[in-house]
Length: 190
Image (spheres, rainbow, N blue to C red):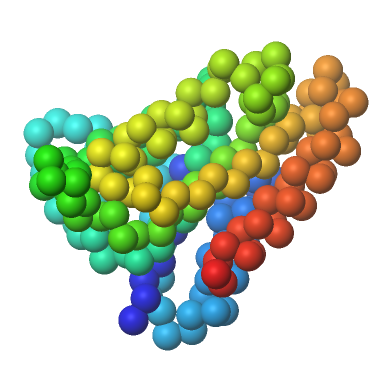
């Protein structure tokens, strides 16, 4: 039986782009895997504690049990929410690190990270170097092998509808969100 772990970390519920797109992924995955197990963790509603030396084996068990993990990661101040960082810190422990022999205990898992970004951080854009979201996640997930089957789906220019200075990019925002929906639905059933 296959298992999906669905993580959301946006502080917003109404109008959250990352929640909207991870939900689309989860809905498509669940339709394609009706017998599959589904675990949902909302890190905003139920944040995990920051690292304090107390082990939280249930978090590690959830990650180990999952075949597929979808993570909603909105960009806050050019990086990920602190609640998502706390969750990562809790399961990124030496017991699941890639060994010196290259064996990755979590390496067979499929990971899809859905990002929501108020602006654009693509190569060649003025803020390209401000993206501390995707590079950080790639790096930290590589410690456990979760980068071996890792996909990023970006919904960009999400602030175009609320920030008058970005109004000229509304069409790009609509296209980016539609593309993110299309991609996650394809990834969910692949």
